[in-house]
Image (tube, rainbow over all chains, first blue to last red; front, top):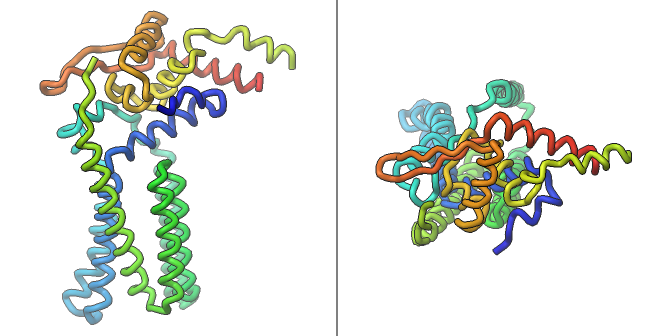
Length: 212
Length: 98
């Protein structure tokens, strides 16, 4: 077994703690299942905007779902994971209560997201968006790098590489931006959901260790 | 420089042991955690973790509370104020010496 304590001389205690907590967070596959469901919902709402004509009920439903349902799913997924772990997996995973979220940090992240959204809206209004291929490739590479850096596990690095390659392939296929996003998020959603389910089943097959 | 290195002699030996440092660092990053979570996360054996927690409790760095959640017994561990101070001091001394 690779003893994490042997790395204490190479890393600071805070870095070790952060790495261990992140690994523990991802070990049961639930975060991947949540990410997969979010990505599939994004793909479904994009697909609705592709197949239905603007102004139709289907198009409007797709638009409002992407504007309201997707952010709610992203925000609610951490809460749902915590509830599932507390109610059904506490014997296997143990109990942990994290510190309350730092409001200042949350406000900064929300502010940055808002500025990016406003800049994207202005760019879209003025027709100043870069070609769709660049946006698709950039989304794939950016998402891939984020997954590889934040997951701290080999399967997240593989998923990140797959996302970057998918983004580049979709960019080269010269499809429209909406179709490209539907393919990118749909494929990554399925992959993430499948990977999460496999990890979850393997985790559930491990025998629960005796408690102190 | 020599003064900073000499400060290494002041390092708290209870917290300097790698297994205990890992436990204290983890508890500093969360509000509270139970024995099972600490064991899963650190990879320490039940006996090792139990021994380390006892030493940390004796030193007053960790508070341990036995409770239940439904039918499951929980051994909840929290870092005390004293434990937090000692970890902060440890960080400063190590950072200064390296």
